[in-house]
Structures are given as structure tokens and as C-alpha cells.
Amino acid sequence: MAERIKVLLSEERVNVRIREIGEQISRDYAGKQVHLVCVLKGGSFFLCELAKRITVPVSLDFMSVSSYGGDTKSSGVVKIVKDLDEPLKDKHVIVVEDIVDSGRTLSYLLEMLRDRGPASLRLCTLLDKPERRVVNVSVDYTGFEIPDQFVVGYGLDYDQRYRNLPYIGVVEFE
Ligand code: IMP
Ligand code: MG
Image (cartoon, rainbow, N blue to C red; front, side):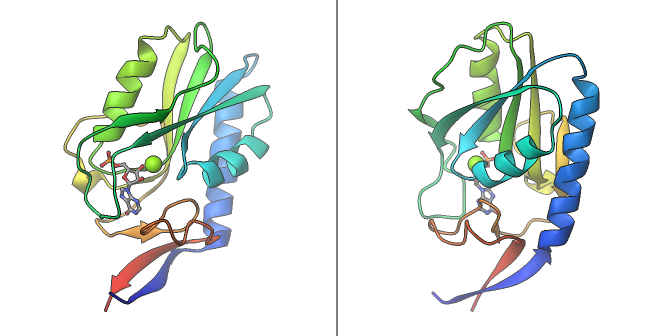
């Protein structure tokens, strides 16, 4: 199926918003060190930009879970493909995600990470599609709330493509 990408959030808008979130996190965690947990692969572009805008000490770790195939609907099955390298005990953890859609992935993940005993645990997402929520997850930092449309770019893929777009676009199927 052929598809076209229409710009939803320009590179400029995304970067301005990420800078604001970075400033907010720097204020909220003044005097502390934050441990950013990136959910691969989608969260990686956002994590890099965000980390550069945070002025308190930052450490990073990465994990990979899968809930999607080449489809645009969440299967609800969450599998840890790559776990974190380091323990979370007593750390101020912020999970950095590309998007919260049904909330299934995040609700599973947050529960699992909470069991590891972090000093605090928050969720930061670049995009949120509140209309699509099936499982309740509380988001602490949101870049943009967007309508129920399938988006790509800034880490988000359609069948593994378009992650490298420097803006957020909507996929239009022809
Ligand atoms: P959830 O478990 O339904 O919240 O799905 C979360 C995951 O689904 C995200 O981390 C993305 O990988 C993927 N996803 C959800 N919506 C989109 C979208 O619009 N574009 C690309 N990937 C999406
Ligand atoms: Mg993701």
C-alpha cells in the first residue's frame, strides 16, 4: 500500500517543546540526579534531544520491549527484548517514550520497573493519544497531545521506516 506523510508537528515546534520539557525537568529535579530510561527504538530520538536540554546530572539506560509487529494496532502482548543494564534501586527514574497510545505497554512496563525499587518513577512521553487509552497510565511530562491518527518521525515508525524524519508526520494511506 502506498502512503504519504503530511507534517503534523514541524521540527521547530518539536524542538521548542523538548527544550521546555528539559527545563521543566531540570527545575523539578534540582539538586538530584535523573536516570533516564529509554524505551527503544521509538524513544531514542526524543531521549537524545531531551537529555541535551537537562541541566541536572543525567545517567541513561535503554530497554526494548515489543508489542507491535508491522501493524498499526497494539497486540497487547508485551515482551522484554532487551532489559536495562543497571539496577533502578534508589534512582530518580524517568521513563522516556515516544508515544502513549492504548497505554498497555507503559502500564506493564511501569509496574515492572516500580518493583525494582527506584526512589521515584515518572513517565515522559513526546506524544500522547488520549482518545486511544484502554489502560489508565499517568503521564508526568507530555510533549503534545495528538488526535487518533497514525504518526511517524522523531523515532516513530511505520513498518520500521520514517523513524529518522526530524518532524512528526501523519501517515496517509492511498
Ligand atoms: P500502546 O501500548 O498501545 O500505548 O502502544 C505503544 C507503542 O505503540 C508505542 O511505543 C509505539 O511504538 C507504538 N505506536 C502507537 N501509536 C503509534 C503511532 O501513531 N505511530 C507509530 N507507532 C505507534
Ligand atoms: Mg515505543
